[in-house]
Image: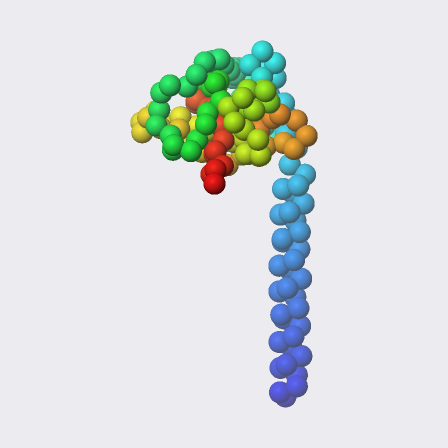
Length: 166
């Protein structure tokens, strides 16, 4: 009897493990097959937006670039913001959305500000706190672009943390 219960227990755990691995595989394959469609390319603004789902019909995308030094908002002392920020909005704002935003930056400006090996990232302006907040973003290793996903569009800038000099 004891041998039969051990065999049954092994079969149950095997089935649970197989089910678990199938669920993980399904999730990973869906995530990796997530196809982004271009919502708008704004070459003059050096920006583009993409989404996994279409926005509601009639939604307008407004990308307003500001080529100027960013003299407003608190930020850590070791953060250097590039001299440009973008105001982005959707009109009307959908109930729920996630977009991938891509910003292009000028490598010469980055270098002139002391950027050498620092990672360029995206910062969002928190209007309530009057501060620039770092966001999770990804810097391309082949082109001077930075991408991030967001479900909230407002004011964004690119910047980097200065390396500590010894």
